[in-house]
Length: 80
Image (cartoon, rainbow, N blue to C red; front, side):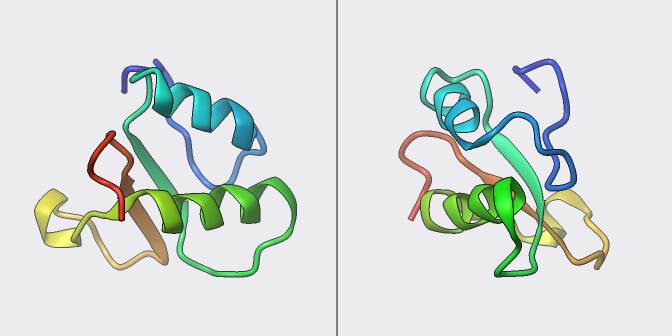
């Protein structure tokens, strides 16, 4: 990843404002987050933002396994 670190739904960092800035500046393109809606706090805000601003990547496109996680492509112009 361009950010130099994996950003998953399990860590409270980076927070939503940092995620949006990383995406806006092209330093972050993909988020791998839990698909469970209604999570509390930072995890929920980040997942809600990804669902409304990014495009879910089909598991077959990256050989993902059914894990309850979703890979989101947040490149500018790709989102919903």
